[in-house]
Image (cartoon, rainbow, N blue to C red; front, side, top):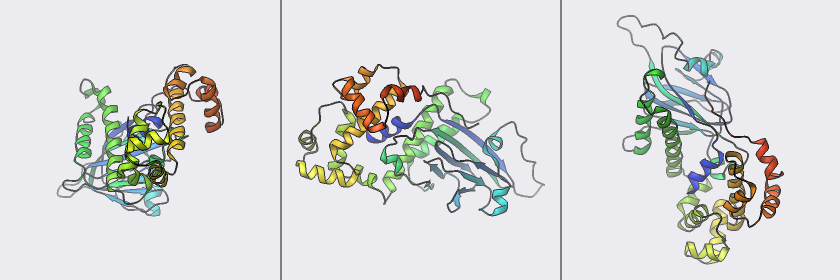
Length: 319
């Protein structure tokens, strides 16, 4: 595993959901704040996204936007004003294909039509990786020639799978859609990392020493790491590793390893029926007692109580 894959896997629960919606004329829909991340991709036309507490964002064909912290927002045909927000309908009602289609425009007139992919990921934020916590409330990825080709390819594939009515979906779409939605999330985060000029984590993953140490820790979190072994893996002295790693990630290497082991253990307790001894072994603890002591210090509860309070994740839809 790598940092981005692990960061997503540790917080993702349930199944992502998505809709392909088409609307014309005057329209406005609201999505309230939620425990997860949301996205919109404009396939055709243009619209506006109005985040709670933020400035309106114009979206054109091919633009993608990620709301990684579940910020409430409005999508509409025009910029924000009191009248626009007041007429917003709930997103689930707006996206419901059973609603009547807008009336056809009079002959010779033009209608502002927009087609979008809209979706949500359900996330457990109790111990989110700092890489995800550092993402801004809104990540806007404009469509520009030659930019983010992998993201564009994922959007095209996802749009194809979501075309038509649900009963017209092609064989295998129940497997393909969640996988494509996961791929879309990865590509949006990759694009932010590649283009961001602020924040510690783009710098951490761009620094060869820190990135090498992170790769090693995430590839084998249960290994008996020491500062000396990790410094040798990164090809630098122990003081150099400690200085650069701590400055860019906010934690010394061994403190980061302990935090990550316990965060990974929490995900295993949440998502698997593995016994406590097996979970302890998988994250690098020699005994369930040592693991339980460390887990309680980090989470404020025992592994057993944590598991009972975080049952197996069910499905999640936007409805």
